[in-house]
Amino acid sequence: MHSIRTKITVLTVSAILICSILIGTLSAFTVKSREELNSERLLNTICDSKLDKINNYLHNTETSVETVSRFVYDSFDVTPLSDANVIGATGSGRSLRKRPRTAAQQAALDAYLQEHLADAEAVCKTIAENNSSILSYYYRINPELSNTVKGFWYSRQSGNHFKKLTVTEIGEYKPDDFAHVGWYYLPLERGRPSWLDPYENKNLGETMVSYVAPLYKAGTFIGEVGMDISYATLVNQIKELKILDTGYAFLTDKKGKVVYHPQLEHGVLLGDVSEEMKNVGRSNDTRLIRYTNNGVQKEAAWNTLSNGLNLFVSAPIREISAGWRNLSWLTLATAIATVALFIILTLSLVRKITNPLVQLVHASQQISEGDYNVDLSYEGDDEIGILTKSFQQMANHMRVFINDLNSKAFRDALTGVRNKGAFDIFLMDKDESIQASTPENAENFAVVMFDCNGLKTINDTYGHEKGDFYLQNACRTICKVYSHSPVFRIGGDEFVAVLQKEDWNNQKELERQFEQAVAEINAVAVNPWDKVDVAMGVSNFNPWQDKSLEEVFRRADVQMYENKKRMKEASQSV
Image (cartoon, rainbow, N blue to C red; front, side, top):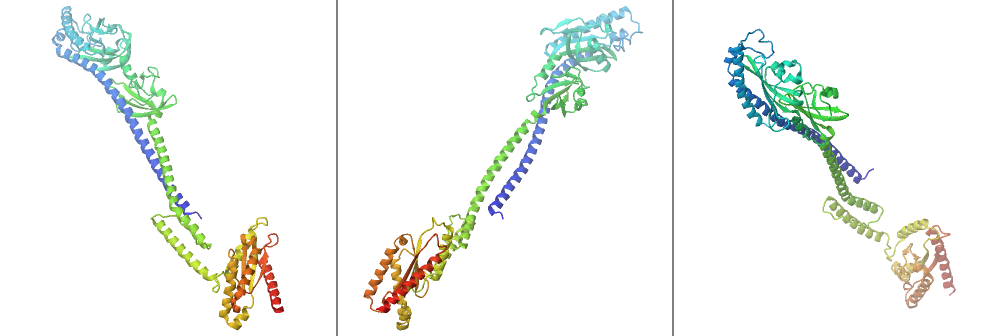
């Protein structure tokens, strides 16, 4: 059967562990969910923040082009187009082939276009010089309108000032030659202002991003106004973005082709790198995706820029989850420390509660064995303290009661010495001591038997009262001489003294003192009952021979009867 301490400890510690595990698991799950949500928010926030910054950069270019386009549209006069019979020109090079134009008509149109370009060039220059992100700007007149007035093109590749360049001859290149004339044909095909994906402009020998607006008046394609920004400038804004420890940002086009990536080549399809990235980037909604690249699990947030490119912000999952993992370990360590603390406190409290109970158990066992001298030290003012005090009081009362009972049960009422019952208990205790010891370390002792001669004669002649006085006088003399040894009355006129330690060493001297004391009493005695007439026999314990006190007692008894016989023979001869 387990102790109460064990049961309370097991129950309490189990409850603490179960609660800690449940709370710890719930905390870890909550922390993980919250941190994952925060990491998603972090990636999305970084992506949106950089998206807004780049969009503002792009928006400045869009605004500049739209401002020039508005000016061109508002300032352009339809009359010269009508007079020159070019209404409906599309810029394809085919729409005006069958329309005859006189030299005078063309000259008038060229003169107007030249004047128009001068005004547009002034506006473009003012706007471009106030926009530091503009790499080049241009206004290309529809070749169908004029072969001599082509437009203008300025660039500041090598400095802060724009330099006028020779405009591109559209007719020299095929429409699908994107590197040379893609900036012209793509917006024309779309029929609206458009961003072009980053491309290498063969005319300048530099990669750039262009925003071009086709211009129409009275259903006639007039030309295109465009401005270019440096691809390197755009990429630098992506490169400067720091995400956690090893995260990065990259760009793709609408089809998922890499436009810029710190680890992948330009033009690589994301779907070829990671299966999870096959359909990514084909929606304008902000999303979050997990994928694997070179064996590393990553997570990326993405969104679409105003120029149609997709901006990705990516970081390894181990870095994203580092926060909640560290927090989980901290939570676990805190939980372990808390559990350990509560277990220590529990054990201390259980010990404080059960120690008094253990004392009570030991005290009850002690009492059950007949020892009422218990000492309970717990003095708390709780229920156990009350129980301990009550038990102590009960033990004290029982000790007094038992002592009083023993004094009556094991004391001879006439002489006050221990009676036959007490001698029997002494006999058992002594026998146990003899059995537990070896001859070499056994304690020496001797048994002295006393028998009062002539008690029956005194009782019959003078009455029992005088006989009692006679016994008391004899007992008093025995106790006086053998004052350091236990004395028992084991019969009506028989007494036993057990000599130990100093009395055992001085037994001969004690015999002499006893004989002298008897002689002195008898010398002054007047009545028979005043005398002391005692036969005695002595026997010493032999540890090599005797197995019990009873054997010593029997030898002493034999010696006593021999002494009694000699005393009787001596009195008869007199």
